[in-house]
Image (cartoon, rainbow, N blue to C red; front, side, top):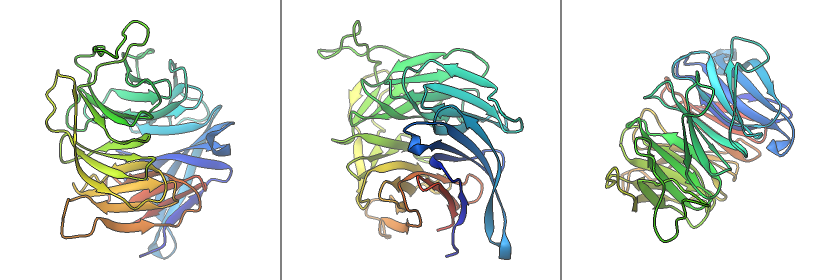
Length: 342
């Protein structure tokens, strides 16, 4: 296998990577000084270009400074040069990569760090954010306030993602060890013996999956199998969940664990299903590796397909190219962005 294409950003530890949905060779990278603990952040715009000997090479096109660390980003699905970032100061910023310096939009509603952001690829004028304040907020780029707030969990919401199959379905994962599915068409508050909608309201989920006894740090929807999700958690486990029994409008606890994929030595920080194959999953971990799995239960191939171990710090992001099948980007606290074809 050829060595990875590498881009280094000295002084800025990476948090998230995303390929453009419009340009096959464009990526964006969210990073933070001092590992995101204190100090500013930086948004990098990167291109994959032909390098020496015809091998791909990474080129930094430009970067934008932010006053606080950047934890996640998402490209717009309607404007080829726009993207949004999630920041440690609770803000969300909209950037135009063709302009210089300042963000073109700022939203400040979350009361703690914004840890994830996701742009819907069905309702293309809508994006979602999740925060350590326990909420998920739904936004439109031309409206100055959020259009919906879910009190999703009583604790940190590490990630919130729109379903790629149903425009009103959002999944979340949290410190509390659960995955939850919310139907945005019927927001309501949870009821029951442990619910108190007056002092501590909690939005009603259509499904709650008790995914782990530890924190669930990441999730993703399968791109080909509706209602199938993967989760990664502090207990080092990657799990695939079949949630097809959900009846919209009801509030249920369940989810069938279709497969468990042990192997990582530390917490699983980020995972992403392939956009080209239904059974291919990439995972990034604090064990400094990115791993690629075949998720077909009891399939002819062993589950673990490949280990990328070129990083020297926590691997916190992985993203499959939307256009070039099999091309994978990984990013790490070692300030290195790698692009590989495993």
